[in-house]
Amino acid sequence: MDYTDPLSLNLYTYCYNNPITMIDPSGHAPDWLENIWARAKLNAITRLQYPWVFAANVNWTTMKIINDRINNSISKVENNKSFINNAGKEFGVPAKIIGSIILKEQYTQSIPDEIAIADGLIRGATHSVGLGAIFPSTAREAWNSVNPDEAANLPSSNVDLQNKLYLDNNFNIRTIAVVLVHYAKQIYGNNIDISSLTIEQWKVVVWRYNATDKNKADNYSDKVYEYLDSVDELLD
Image (cartoon, rainbow, N blue to C red; front, side, top):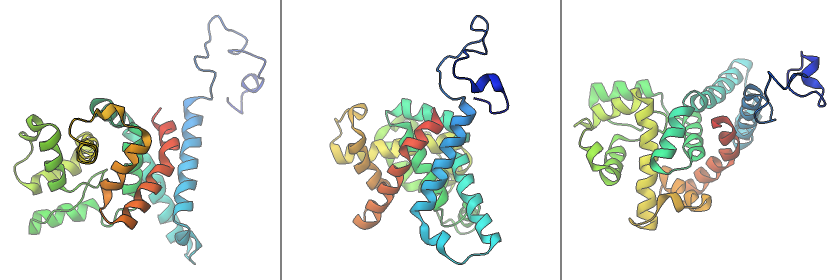
């Protein structure tokens, strides 16, 4: 629907009164409008999840920084949707879970990745980096468990692996999926058919992704799951 085009506003006109040469494959709103709606819902959900941020007496500049951070976090999902969808198919993980984790991790990022990378180069320290905020040690453990052949080709040092997680979005997204599969096997057994897990079973895996402390993990998985439906629309 285009609000500047009268023909698109009349529900009784079909394909601009020319169904021979014009098509309407889905009968739904155009993709760009659905994306705007999905982004608006994700923005609202994030605001509701952290009401104390917006209830505080902050100035216009601070509010703009917060708004930009929300929108940039949503864009990280939208701009990488092909990688997210492909990783979901490759490893049997619902793409909307991968995307929702990225949104949550990007919005709540504690320190910029650039600082984490610099710290690695200067002190040899490692941090959780990239779209999925993954520690290189966690990434290596998960790859060794899920795909030893690919694990054998990972950078030998954790600092170099940290750089790869930061620089290569596709690798980072695939690693999110691999970490989730790794934890799923720990929880449900090595012989579990990953593709058979229900969305509620995956919530237990997401619970493990971020923390082992029950209160923190409950809070994390609940917030990630509030994003699922709208992220699913954004990835469509």
